[in-house]
Image 1 (cartoon, rainbow, N blue to C red):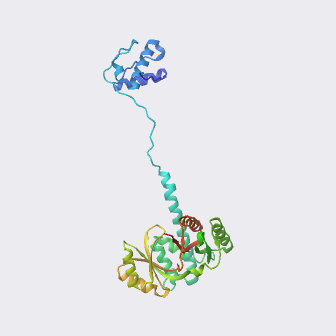
Image 2 (spheres, helix red, strand yellow; image 1 turned 90 degrees about the horizontal axis):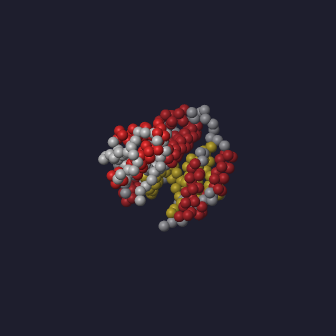
Image 3 (tube, rainbow, N blue to C red; image 1 turned 120 degrees about the vertical axis):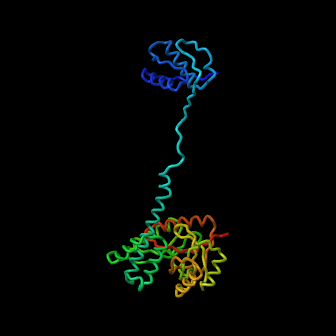
Length: 324
């Protein structure tokens, strides 16, 4: 009922191994090499078998081979495969850090292009250029570096001429999309947007703009504000509506919708009520939402992600609504 382990050593390795056993005071050992004689080799083999098998009771029996002696203290030797730590730093870098850095780089590139266009159209002074002032405010709310903003303003004159385009499209389930593009080559951008839409179940078409209204939006930090309190703030500040959403970094924010001419008044009223506002701007707000089922929502999410990954796309508005 015993276990048999066969080990093969040369003369030098056997001496080193037995020396380790002697230093530990464990098991049976013999310092004779295997080629010194059959008896000594057999006694060494018996000692190693008893030691490596961990069978303590076998050590008390008589060993038929001469040259072996019994030691009262022994220690069992167990061998096991190496274990991994269970985590990998590279997997975190590949799956988390690299996508975040790529999204951050796209965000900086888009706002840099918007700032350059705003400077060319209205000048480099934010006090006399409302569009530039709003963009700078949005950049600060998204923690863009000050040096990047200043470099975009100074480099506007040297940059290539770019144009803003608004594409109308229809997505999966009949939802409507407005795609704002900033590019220096309209033909290239048109073909690429068309290819992305066709590949992901969408198509370029007219009529999408009628499903949206251009409104002023005051973006505020939520800071634990409940839905009921957000509605009360919208009424008290003079806003038409309030929407709960998330920014690019998945942080909860509130969007107070109002007329474009009353953005400053609404923002001042919100700040007087203790709300921390982040930025103001003009956006397209849906006036006729399209309810979608879960499979259609997943297809729309894939399409929106593909469009956002295209460098020339600045913003996308949709009228998607989850069907409960």
